[in-house]
Length: 96
Image 1: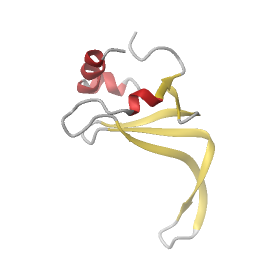
Image 2 (image 1 turned 90 degrees about the vertical axis):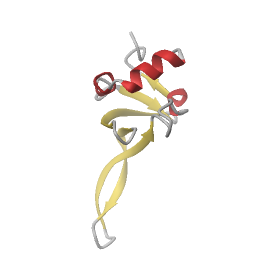
Image 3 (image 1 turned 180 degrees about the vertical axis):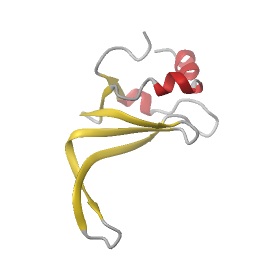
Image 4 (image 1 turned 120 degrees about the horizontal axis):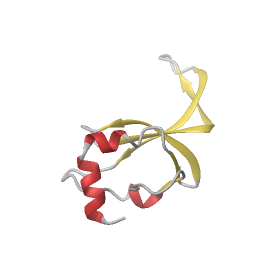
């Protein structure tokens, strides 16, 4: 994908929101895009299979939650970060 097309996509909130729900491969594991914090420039990925233990407010392990990654999809100048090189969309190309 060209840098210009990627830049256009990350600048468009509606287009980025369309990524929610798409399956991706990141760091050799399957995830799903579960949320987008456009103002902060964060793409949230959650795993179906791999789980982490979540602690309560006292630091005690309480429950299993999906493994999650909060990825910066743009830098301070608004340009795409390198995470786009590490993401593979499993249901087809990023831009159709």
